[in-house]
Length: 322
Image (cartoon, rainbow, N blue to C red):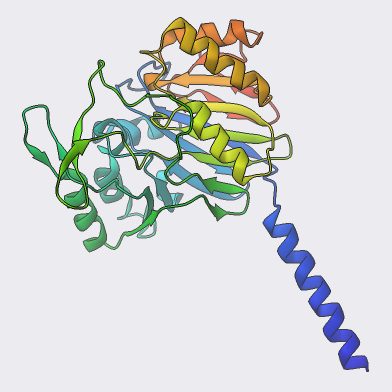
């Protein structure tokens, strides 16, 4: 009888622990921008990268465009990337992946586990077609060199929790007509699984989400799937929890005023309180969203190298983007 009681108690405790882990909320969160065009410290470039520190977990999200931008900016900001084991690539484009292999090679001498795990969405390593009609398999080649050097790549098809309270969207369904994947109004080309040349709508595009005690925080590289499509996908997977902050690149720079207004109306519905538009968001859309959401100065800002978001402080930015 006593054994049965202990077994029941153990089962109950185990179930409680599992339930707590399944609903874990991050208590302390800091996101630091390491690559974008505007820079208060270090080097600005057409690219994106950010360091996520969620409780004890550290993740590098995207790797910038040039080989040394993220490395040099992290040094200037006093950030040691050799203690970061995990990297997430939001999508295939050079301005997010160019620093991937160089960064891994630069930090592994100090710590073999540094940036040794990379998460990617299904389709990131597909062959792209350049504007001149040439095949581009750079990321596929990089992945082979990365794994030969001891790295490991995980490719995702679905929404997934990669650490307690930290999620990746995986490729995002697109019920809303957001077409934030055109470049100068044009659509690039790629090869599909059958070798056919098709429009490259960046199907692998995925974002990172942190569940906090205050609500959800979204980090995106370019948001080629569409900001509202991404948020809808997140809420469908996380019980319609409010999204309090959206940070990163959202590819709104080619959107019309009407499209920006439509986006802002949806952002208002999900409870957005903080907006940082970096990289491909565009400067004017950031100020339009600030006005349409009735946010204060400092609550909707243009992202810059060195700018941070923290749960208890909100945004901290340099003089250029305050």
